[in-house]
Image 1 (cartoon, rainbow, N blue to C red):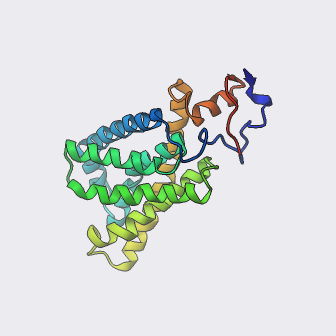
Image 2: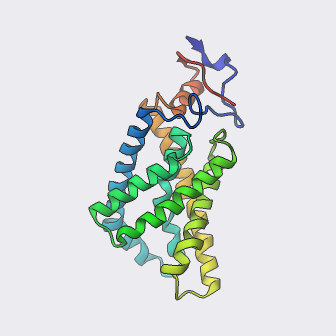
Image 3: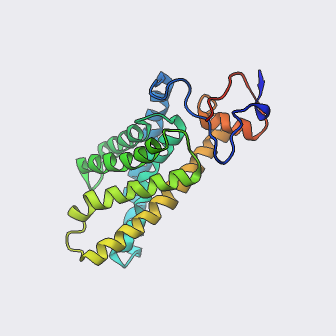
Length: 225
């Protein structure tokens, strides 16, 4: 047993626990956990699509401001990337959520897979640039912002915003980036920390970081950078 607060892996603002072993060596429990998480988000998406989204959109009279809702759909990518911390985790979780959302029924149909790929890739790119070694709130805010940028520029501008003038498209992009950074980035980070506090993520880096912060014990040395 190692007292974690005295271990060189003790996380600071610039040091976080990484995935165990090689970063590409996925474990079975990681696939299962992200699949369950993706299903939960997919069901939540369905509820959001049916019961809340229409009323929120109706309350946003300025059309570009409707992009403030985008961050909700980016949450699985942020949470998945934070929990497993391996290449593909963000994209995998986002695709599972999109699949469940589509199967339950939504207004976009299979087009949600295009969005899911772009959204997942936005988070993946940020984590890849940092070599899956940084996982602070600022990092996932950047991931959420990039995911929103890819979604707007590569998809929304050419489908849902064809009637917008370029100025409106830029405004929509700005609103989307804010939503991606705050709703998805900060929100996904908060959701992950809340899950870690319950103990359900004890086998994953966020759970071990939670124990570290509490000055707890662990039976394995953290993989820290």
